[in-house]
Length: 184
Image (cartoon, rainbow, N blue to C red; front, top):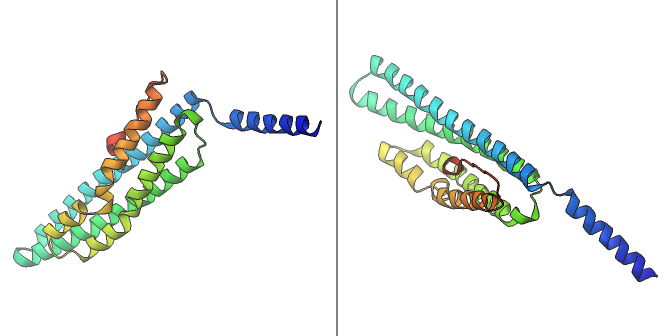
C-alpha cells in the first residue's frame, strides 16, 4: 500500500511538473516577442550611437583641425563606443534575465539553454571590450578591440544557437521568426 501511495504521489508530481511547463505555442510567441524587443533596443542603441558620434565629430571639425582634431575625434570615438557597449551590455543582461525566467517546454529545453548560454558568453565579452576601447590610442586599436573581443567572437555561436532554436520551433509547425542576426 505504501508503494502504491508513493507511486501516486510521484505520478502527481510528474504530472504537475509536466503541466507547469508552458505550451510550445505560448513559448514561441513569448521568445519571439522578447527577442524582437531586444533586437529593437540593440538596433536603436547602434543608430543613436552613430548619430551622436557623427554630430560630435562635426562639432569638433568646426572648432579644431589637424592633429588636435584627430586626437579629439579618437577620444570621442573611443569614449562613445565604450558607452555604446555599456548600453548593449545592460540590454543584453536584461534579455538574458528574461530568458532565464522562462521555463521552456521540454521539446525545446536544450535549445533554449544553449541559446541563453551563448548569450551569456557574449555578455562576458563586453566588459573586457569596454576596457580595451577606453585604452585605445588609434582608430586601428578601436577596430581591433571590437574584432578581437569575446563579444564579437561569440556572435557566431549566438546566431547558431538562435537559428537552432528557431529551426526546432519551426519543426513543430510554428512560424518562429527570431532576429538571430541581431541576437548577440
